[in-house]
Image 1 (cartoon, rainbow, N blue to C red):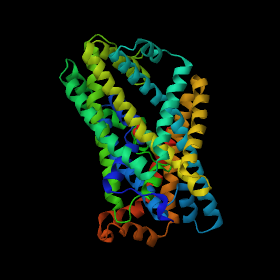
Image 2: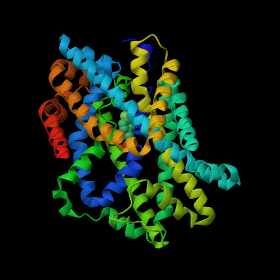
Image 3: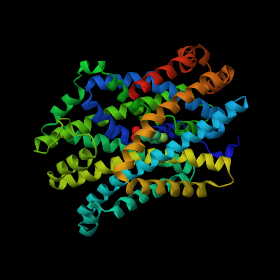
Image 4: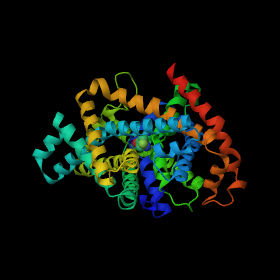
Length: 449
Ligand code: PFF
């Protein structure tokens, strides 16, 4: 493939972009609340084991395929096939993957629009811009659609600039900012009354929960969603990685950073909920379970910030900036998956492809917003619970059964010369061939019961 298709300029550039894709609303919102309602430290343990045992090997499959082919998911899987039918299968899996990436982005952008609204609302409050504040807090259809559109425009604007000037340069600016804001918020919240109770709830393990299959499933689903697997985003980022970078190390770095940030986010969210409780705000729903859904982010936390006066406004700005940044670095990777297919398989250039795909995705978001009750949850579960694990299995099978062993070894050897003698090479090829697909399938079929 041609070299002008773009490439990350450094290891850090790749790490920031891939970690940016992985660290999103799933880490800061999904992980802490799931942990709190599924046995605290026990969930954390299950999550860590599954992330390294199943999600990391699957991530490696995507990175290896991507860098080997130096192409988008459709072309890459097509080229791996040696017969007409495996090629056709490859293209089908690839198209399905980018379709899922687009669908995830269409609901993700709606939620990200809500984050931008909250951010804008707090900024307007700070500068005394009351008309904007009222509009941003209204529940109007127009507000939902415009803020979703704004978020998609930001995503498109970054993707239109390309790999180095867009994805890499924005990820390397936004990710450190995200970490600084997260750390600052944690330090502040932990000094507030009630915080320690939240820490206990988050960290003290209830091991009896480990015997529940649903706990393992939630942990697996969370790990796959969090590492952005199955939909071609990691594959395309792998294809922009330089040949002299070690894939196993890069993959391990991304997995470590992603799980590390998910864990750290729990140190903010759970204590904040209990600080809110200490202020008299309800944090348990009618069913007696800890609030986890939109009620947590859009009611509990804003009510907490409202009790804190001026400091609360700043906290709210910081918190919703954190959420918006996390969403943006993930959404650019989701958009890059279909955009790379279009630019590499048709005559359309990057800028046109980015706006075209952004437009299509916004149309789908609009349909979802107009049918929120009926569609939102369905699209979420169809894409993240069903499609991502199945696509993950398919990609492991491509690496395990269709890619030749010497292709695999050559790809891994580039950037990691002594790979043949490493533990990774002794275990991983066998692992993605047999164990990973079977385990993912097992967990998946359990979820259908
Ligand atoms: N990893 C993101 C999160 O944890 O929020 C979500 C995500 C990003 C899923 C990119 C899929 C994807 F392609």
